[in-house]
Length: 464
Image (cartoon, rainbow, N blue to C red):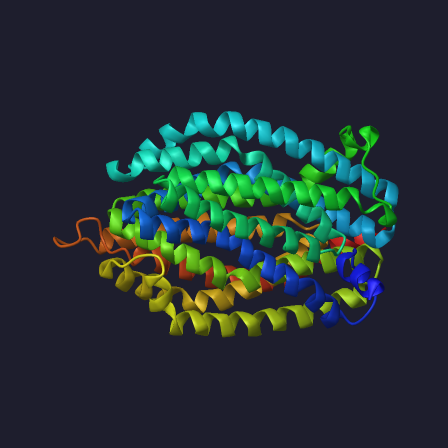
């Protein structure tokens, strides 16, 4: 029994055994963890929507793109760390593994301090630039300011859990996240329902819960001495070469997130022009959308770890086998979940609000996006393969094309062409049809990029 528990909670070597078993064992707890992660913002939205109203619901929703933009530092560090950790773990290069982990921890602290300073300073200005409605503005500013001041917990959880997953341990981050999620729900109810706070209450609850999950992840990392993990003053001093490698590998993903966030901010300005009801609806749809995307993100992350470890071990044949079964599994799960969301869409919307206008609009938007979730399954799985091989540039360029060149122009053009006396700013359908088109074209571009095989050349070069 002790042996089974040790194996379950230990690092997973994905260079041996059946690829499907490796991916399933890694992905299931990761999927549950991603769902729990999504519950943070979802519960925030449900509670403020029910106990405060649509204005508070809109405040949480309109804050999302700005929050994501300033989190890109963590995104870059996490991606670069995950690739290096998985490859060093697969190659059994313990000294390089420890240097990478120590450097990541120090870079995370530096990034946290930067965001804690820059975030609150930029928030009021950015919210004004987005033409945020007056009944939403103050709550949105309070939400973001509190979140940024407590960003250190979010940063360390995401980075350290990424390191643990790079070594194949997806169970520990899951358990710690579930603990934090339960605490977050309790604190949300305490601060909002019990103490009468609004968006500031859910922000406070989130940073406390994320701080707890970060401490637990760091404790888990420190306890992994049997896997050769040693965290000391020496390893915590940033290594120049390692830092450059993390930035080189992570910068494209960080830039990708920045592009997504900047595009989302531009589109958010368009969303805000439609009024509080559309903002609230968009917030709810994006929360449901987050759950629909979970299998896609999960298999993308699993493929990155799997490919990274097997490339580190110079097992290209296993890489090819894993890509095939992983992509098929992702497609099947995504299709099933998308069907469930279509069937239960109205019920999901009613969990957040009782406003019929918001509910009806939300159900329509979910139907528009449905096919896109399946297309994104292809994009995320194959992008994960490329990142695991060290090719982080190709997914970045595809993201730039689909987001900047395709989605934003279509959204604004659609809005301009649908302006009527009843809808002076155009139809809100533009927000979601533009997203659907960008997702489908992104899947096509990613498939052709994978087939072209630049990632294979990158993998062979790294193994030379």
